Length: 360
Length: 264
Ligand SMILES: Nc1ncnc2c1ncn2[C@@H]1O[C@H](COP(=O)(O)OP(=O)(O)OP(=O)(O)O)[C@@H](O)[C@H]1O
Ligand SMILES: [Mg+2]
Figure 1 (cartoon, chains in turn cyan, purple):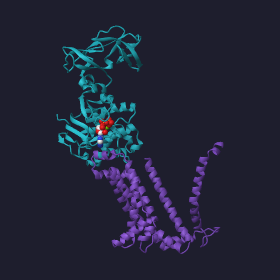
Figure 2: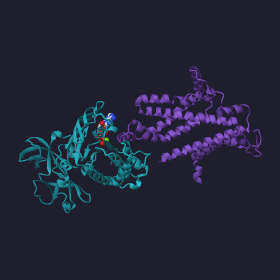
Figure 3: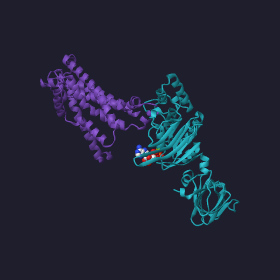
Figure 4: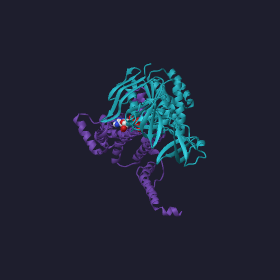
């Protein structure tokens, strides 16, 4: 199937500053795609180029196969949910939602039907005749979402729409947003710098850094097989162990780190002995025990810090002299362990290797 | 009690405020009081009170005509100055950097040029272009004076407008004309309304420009001025009192409306 959005070699510079560079991105219809990256990496610029508010310096943007690179925002079939909602303050909720439909020339009867249908979708029927200033943050958010959905866009663009909400409401809205996306079957292009948000909602995550795509893929494989140190540290917590390859054997590599030999799955890499490399070890892949565990990698250590977090316990374990590993374990795992003498271990499959030239 | 005596700065501030209020209202109250006096000259004590002067004034053809003329000029001034003022404010709002400041300074100039200078220059100007003194010339003069006030009020509101309201409208399919009339203009509404009230008051109160640009038909300030020259009488107090009441009501009502819209 033809992708609904295609960025072809898109580049955007402001003066001599390059905000987005060499962007090639295809987005499949009906998917929830998230642009994830640190502040200033060019996420909003990418979104605004698709919305028509910025013109690419180079390259083309196709929307449903049509070149829209030079088409003004009011004549392309995408809608944005703005970070601060941008609801029209002098219009009621219903009028706000109807705005895009009226401009499309839809007749009044149909507009009314669509508006009440959309209000029902987010359970805001009783609020139809209120002004935006008479709504809570979460309600405004929903109205902004419905206003953007009303004209039935090819793609819905959302620029950090949840960042103004408190933590609790944000979680509720994440789930609601995902549910609405699935219900309507719309393509959502979502921008955030919050990795947890990205992991929760997305079908595809596009990790951006310094105006470029660092890596893209579904959340699970990005998390499990990050392709660079940047992605590994940006998506979730991680232990990044700088090591040297000592040998390889059937998809596994043996590397030396801190005086110990670690067996790690090589993944897509084919490392050679002598290569400098990073081992990605997720904190939750580490297990702790009093006796020697039966896994490929095991080493003795001392617990330097232990923080009880309810459903898990977060540990800092010192290995050798001054090398700390972060670990997340079930609280019962560390009950009654002596702090100064424990075993930590992890399997070879739980780790990934990253070439160290990608280290930032 | 002790706290009150130790709070000298606060007490001084309060006393000055009330002295100021007295200074503000005493002359006005005198004027209003005398308008009810049962005698044709101004003196104290007031003696018997009467509304005869009011009856006389509202039957005064000259007075009524002057009122009508003043309102007509004020209305025309307001309509024209508002359109021009909003236009200029939008223009300045769309400029960037130094040009913006220069444009703003030029737009504000007519508000700070002394009335007399502005009046004389306008008089020379209309003579040069062969425009007769009278209604059109007066309106021209008043508009020049009123526009900067509209510009400043509208521009202030425009600057407080979230930038992405316009983006949102464009995004939902509105071209720039539709965006202006359906989003920007309603947002500016309270400021435009305030600016219009200001125009009305400025125009109906103007004496100097009207004096230099007017023809034979007097506006209210001109009429009152002419009457004062032929001697003070309670009739003048009545006219002044009526003007005071109307302006106060209009001003307070405008304030109430803008306050209400600000709360929203
Ligand atoms: N109009 C502009 N003029 C000059 N520089 C700009 C402009 N818009 C964006 N930039 C720059 O481009 C870079 C990318 O900006 P962008 O808004 O896309 O970042 P972002 O990834 O959305 O960041 P955030 O998470 O903080 O919103 C930033 O360094 C920013 O300063
Ligand atoms: Mg941004």
